[in-house]
Image (cartoon, rainbow, N blue to C red; front, side, top):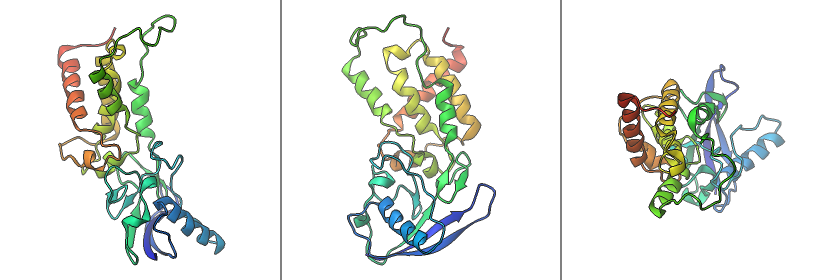
Length: 250
């Protein structure tokens, strides 16, 4: 298939950006979206032009680095699909695709389609771990975890930190990401001693970089892993308890 691409090009964080038009010719419908961009870049390099910068790593929908806005939708048209898992059979011959980086104040553009998601790292650094001193390593099954609790924690832990939730949100909010990273620990017995301090610390850092949630629900729809907005409700409940009851981990 042949496609017309309108790609955002920006030389650096402070440089002006613009859309450039490229022709992607002879693309197999079995190619992934990133493989299509690889083909375009090979042609640009052969012509002595600078290739399009975009982020990728595992290309298996695990690492979360590949997020793009495609025709105004984070990760493209397929639900539950990261950009690297999106295949060109989702499009038709002759389609025009507008490809942009994730647009959010918390994700400043580095170059072209590459954004800086370090704000997510700072949220994790604020409390996305368990530090309680437990002495020597306990046996694997020493602390019983009910199956429903384990399943809920795994549902939250499915978040790959791609940032689609932020890019899709009209407010540029990161509540879905933050609540998933909080909940994957807060629902487990091992996470209880630091539960409220963790919530306070991570939410406070989140609010430094991102907008506020107004329950639009776009985050859940855009998430390639289907993270539920129920986790936002759980986070808000814990945050209120921690704030108004003065509950902090010792």
